[in-house]
Image (cartoon, rainbow, N blue to C red; front, side):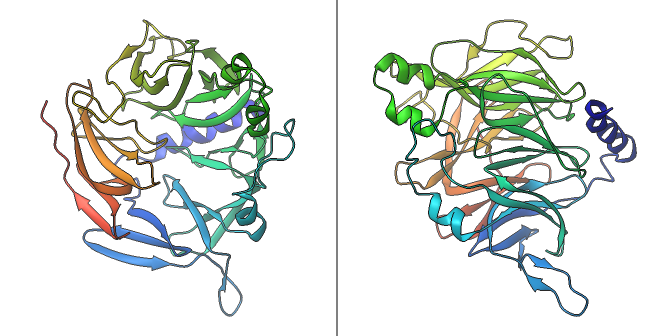
Length: 355
């Protein structure tokens, strides 16, 4: 059956891949349309290419690196002229959900050669932690899963912004906006109530094995986004912003033991958003990393000018500290983090924060 295909492939991957067998992935960044791989104090550059009978042919420049699959293949999107021009354009149709054309997402081998095409209509991609499944979001904010045999579109309760995989690859935490959400609709909202309604995102859990949504986790007024699981999959962390007040922060939700399909208790706020004493900036979506045996979270916080800062905080939110100016933190080894510093060069740190 179609709905069990993803689970069977993930189960097979779990059975044959012990931790010692998993590919040790370097940190990967994008610079000037090339991939920059950094590990053990060394860096090397890769150009995306298509292998040919005589020589390899360069593919379009790389636009974004989305992650590495368990077998070492790289998930990237490629630049297109139409996508580059449309990315800064304003959606002229308030009833249209498409703000810009999607980009082409492909799989590259470790040497940069093309392995497979995923889709040419992707806004964001989220590689799974086991097997070869990739969750993709289209410009229409539809969620699909790719497993090597094409895309399977998921029937979602609204427009999907982004997702986070559970560590075992069996669940997705999905950020869902109202069904009539679009960038144009938000811009065209004529009342405060309608504007706030369109911005009211909630978190849902999706069961990958059953290919169905298992339940809604949040229903608070405001916006919940940026979810990420604890390493054991028993807690879900996410960002919450109040709908009308200057309030927000990082929340922690304990999931029940019944396959983690619902919350076992109300969410707890573990940090308050801000830059003043006792406050911690909000993490950018997809950047939180677990370090120090799940006692520490490292993440990128955004700055008003678009730059970033690397922060660390304890898992309970009791302490936090700014580490450096930089972007795109990635875990390497047991404790180290590699990020792009203010000069766009890879830099390695061993983050520490007092408990």
